[in-house]
View: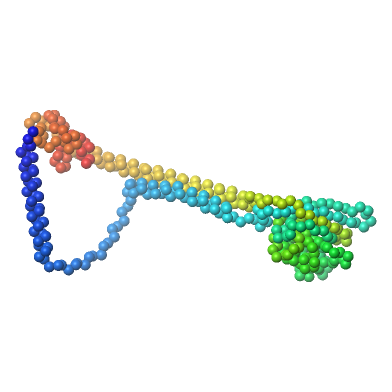
Amino acid sequence: MGASPRAGSRRESGERRGRGSEKGRARLRAGRARAPPSQPRPRPPRLSAPAREPGPRAAAAAGGTMSGAARAGPARLAALALLTCSLWPARADNASQEYYTALINVTVQEPGRGAPLTFRIDRGRYGLDSPKAEVRGQVLAPLPIHGVADHLGCDPQTRFFVPPNIKQWIALLQRGNCTFKEKISRAAFHNAVAVVIYNNKSKEEPVTMTHPGTGDIIAVMITELRGKDILSYLEKNISVQMTIAVGTRMPPKNFSRGSLVFVSISFIVLMIISSAWLIFYFIQKIRYTNARDRNQRRLGDAAKKAISKLTTRTVKKGDKETDPDFDHCAVCIESYKQNDVVRILPCKSLTQHPEAAEL
């Protein structure tokens, strides 16, 4: 089938325009070559454009970024909480450290009584810096200072009365007012082989004492009840012998009470923060989704309104649209037929499809 005359005229006009444009570009290059070089003009300072308000698409993108931050927030908090728990120090009583129990046998020789009174203390505990060794000796308490009983052993004037026939003796002191190191050092200064410190709280168990730099002197802690029992015999000038033996090695506990409370509180706080992040994330997601849907509905309504305003007409027999050489529909590329209802686009083209009006 041969080409139509109209198509041939279009091709010829296109070739003439191409040749004319090539000649114009050649003249322009020749003029630039003859012209003297121009001085560079100073460029005006660029002004920053005013910030535009984010539209629904930008809001949706921001929502995606925010969702990523929301997902990363609880994870980072969880990692931080776990790291803090792992670095949380042990309590002051060293409950998480290992310790050795002390088995203490006490022998009381009362005057006028035939058989001595013997009892055993199983809840003793060696100090952390104390040698774990067996020792035996007579128990002595500090002498009164200016008529006032001294049970603590913290005063620089603390003294012990050691009978001449005693070779090894053990100091009995009460906890409080000064450090364990000071108490043990004062007893060691007076040649005590061991120090037994009883607690100052009746319901509290013995703790693992820390007393670095006290040397080879043995240090043991017992309960307040047992310490006052022994002290009551000493105040009556009754001889008390004590034997301290090494008991059981107790492994360290995984968690002290303070650490357990801290972990529980951290978990609760973490759950609250995570829940708040999730609620915030879902609220923002719903907001951005609604904004996007409203924008799409608004655009759809505007498109429908614009299409409804387009002029329509019916193709009749003899119209130029029925000519085979006429430009057909831009969407379906089909020829117009008689009685077709077409819309007249703003570009003066015709179409049978509403989608073309939106293009």
